[in-house]
Amino acid sequence: MATRATDRYDRFGQSMGVRMVGMSHGPLAGVRIVEFDATGPVPLCGMLLADLGCDVVRIRRSGPDGSAVAPALYRGRSEIALDLTDVAAREQALALISLADGVIEGFRAGTMEQLDLDPSRCLTANPRLVYGRMSGWGQDGPLARRAGNDINHLALTGALHAIGTGSTPVPPLNLIGEYGGGALYLALGMVSGILSAQATGRGQVIDVAQIDGAASLMTLYYALHGAGRWVDARASNLIDGGAPFYRCYACADGRHVAVGALEPPYFRALCEGLGLEAGRFKQYDRACWSDMTTAFSEAFATRGRDDWAAQFEDSDACVTPVLSLAEAPDHPHNRARETFNMQEGGVQPAPAPRFSGSPCAAVPPEPASVDQLLARWE
Image 1 (cartoon, rainbow, N blue to C red):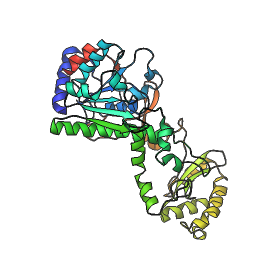
Image 2: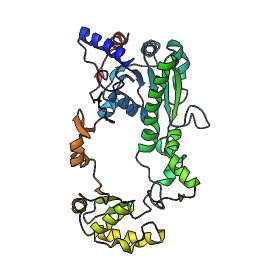
Image 3: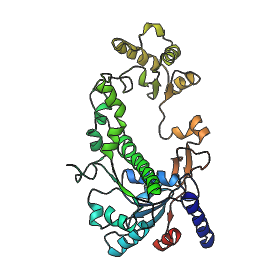
Image 4: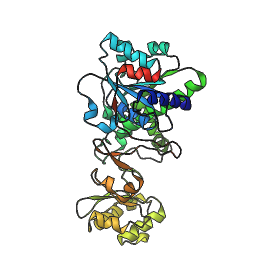
């Protein structure tokens, strides 16, 4: 499909002299997605699909545009403004949907039904369509029509309880609920559904809920807890800040280093770098963790963060500086890999993952008209 679609787009671009957005690069070149503008996971999912080469058309509300605040999240799409309360605008949206491979939307349950752009109508117009519904609570269940944000969805999965200090849960930005449990599962669901539609000729509806995705991400920890190998309390386990060899430490300048010396060889390298005798500690004996924490804290507090970073630069002690948003793009490893780049709006992370034969690209969004888009897709 991708080759056929790409050829079609190339012919259109040559004849019309229009710069193609999101269609000449990446492994998903030629796949057509209609994105209904929303907050939370949907913009990131749209960005990921566009980075991978999908031809994404973002239907946004009339008036001020959220892309002005965070332009990187809206890169790679063609953009149109439609007032979906207007019948004619809804018919224009449906015309695009009838030519699309997929739709992604992130409204509260029932909203698309009220707009008469629900899955039933859209799949009638386009039986091969994959209709991705992104929400916090899902399309059914007691909370389906209730308001909620990332922190609320995370709270009901056990994940929020497991993250933070011994006394207080700490929200991990919106990385686990909205982005990890939402946007990434929506992107995976869309790609999976489109592959299925290509094989069977039948589209389907994908119910993506942040609460489901975040719970899925917790699979390992539920398994460990069920096996009696995970203490159901924050900062009490190997990788939740409980272990002295897997946590952050303050340095003399008030900045921090991250220590991830889980394995014995790395633990020995950590102790050696700190000037401590590794043999004085039994690494996995929890009874020793309090004394170990004190020793490590006192050692790291004697020098600045960058001094410690230099100390461990050529070591397998798994010690790295905790970099700020301003510092991270300039780290030598990130610069060598071009993990960040300069785009419209400033520094932004580059597309990921990386493909050897069909590389991704981050391009600015492009305004368009419905007529232009229909001509491109027909």
